Length: 373
Image (cartoon, one colour):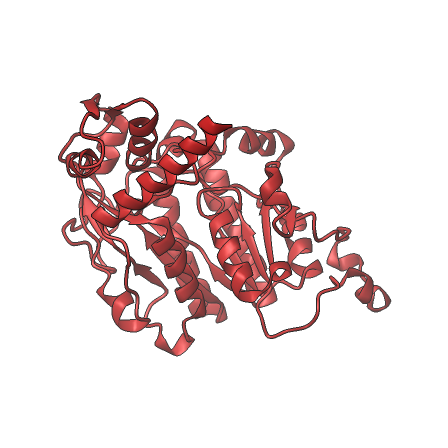
């Protein structure tokens, strides 16, 4: 149900740029009336003037986060620009606003979200809105509202309108009593963060809705995602992004995790491709609703050594953050993603050496352009 204005305002202020938020498009200039107010004679007024095709009509919540913009670009290339609507509660930068449909959408406002699905004939929903691990621990009440209440709104709307629903999960869905090396798809899950608890809740609720209502729910447990396009925003694995920015700009890096803290990681291109593949996988190929996916596992020291092959003068120090170190120590060291590889052919492209090469190439190029201007 809708949460009050105070909480919605707090969501707007507190959501991290890396986590998902809530939003939708202005290129699709729909007028928002409740579906309950629409009569049969009004139906054509509320239909978006897109040609009917076999392509899905996709809504991405939390679209201004780390993954939403990149996934929208990938899906638009595949399904057509106007068939993929990005949404969030924050104002989009110009390049995002002009790249395709964007609409304001607050996942805590059930009526608003329902109208968007109906007015835009949505068939797939990708639910990225969430508060990440460290941010969530700093504001548990807000994380509970966004990550759990928002999920319930999305589940109910998806079930009501027969949507294919994708909700990402995380390495944070496991806890200190889970097997860590490797961590299988099915094992004990007792996370100790509100982020992790909310993701286990999402996995189980999605599976329940699938079995109870026949809803097409799909979920991937993402490892730490590394991208050159976004700044770190409160995640425990974000050191693996920050090191590249600091190494190029300052020649030094301070890490908040211990040098031997090994965690599963993935380059963003692999992550986006895996998401597309699970969305498109034939239902009969899926033996479960939630899958681990993995590409590589490394620790800060191994990453530093790889970066120093290109930047040998990089200075590194360690100033351990007890909160994030505690979170990392309860997470998997390596994911067992054999079921994803067997069921729908998952295969990663980027290992550690390729990751470092592509990150440094992109950020070095951006730095040279910035200096030239």
